[in-house]
Image 1 (cartoon, rainbow, N blue to C red):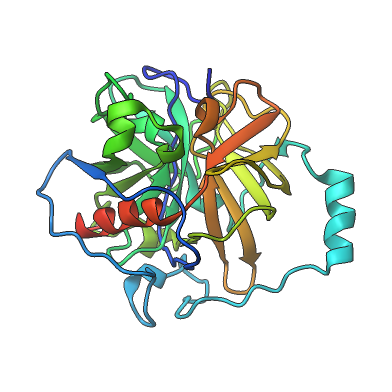
Image 2 (tube, rainbow, N blue to C red):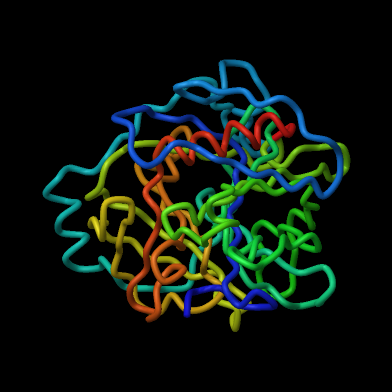
Length: 315
């Protein structure tokens, strides 16, 4: 079944404004990447063990009026006792998401040819070009035997028909060739390179979260996503577990179709207004066959390779 809705039935949006990659032991297969250019031409790919924004670059810009993130933030986590108490009381419960610095970087993905149809969720991550959104591959490419979506827009902060930051066009889509060839659930991740609005990039307007690579399992994360039958996003937090070698699992009630691509955000620091995205709803069962359990591919070196390709595309 999965947790996307719309023409592809399993579509997710993830917005990425700023990304920093934390490296670790290599996981996954060797990388194979495919880029679909909706407009423009592909640039040469850049690779590296870590990706982020150096001090003073636009990729670390925060929303107007908020402090500029110039270095990787040092999260101020709750004490273990307080965290466990919160998890035992509220973990796994789903509610309407508040409008705040966390949800501002999450948006709904719409089809431009079907007005009013939002079918996935996405979030902004940091990058050199300040123009990247992360989402699930099944939201933007049908997998084996399928094709690319080329008629989509990203709408951050969407609520009940309002578009506080406008509609952002998608210039190019980056997915792994193995997703295209075999719908490999371990590679159900995509990066979208967005165009500008009023000559501004998405991250220069909203700021972005880091992208976490090889950070392991068993982390407490918050999820924010857009159900296809609702006008407002929903939110939940809980601890992740390992579903399989390259899959993560989380119990969050009532995350239905449309929430594919919802970011799994950890270690959010309210001082720097930055956290780390370590997953998106997708992967096994295209994110989950029931609304109360969701999955994500494990973000490993394959995801880093996809990100590098998106950056080379101008993201």
